[in-house]
Length: 125
Image (cartoon, rainbow, N blue to C red; front, side, top):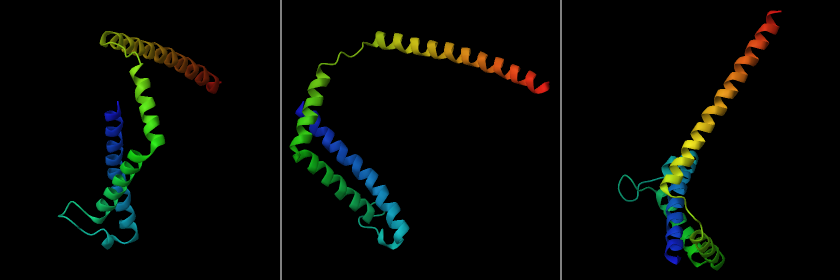
């Protein structure tokens, strides 16, 4: 289970890199576009470096934070106890949700049509 918690920390760092690179790029474009200069080719700019540093920082902080590690392990252990539905159960549940949605939307559509007819009749008086 610890392996999956560590993978989650790395994925969180990668997601932070992506989000923060875009945020730093927007910020640098707003403040001074010349500050977002190219570093390694046309695809790696200063904002990408700042985002990468943010992502690495987040991953390292999560990795070495004992409270976060304990919480991640507890969540992983609880997920082991979850009874996941089988494919036929999922299919039947999906069909039930779709049919229920259709029936409720038809009922609401009829109420809307009835209410529209009543208000039209009242306005014509």
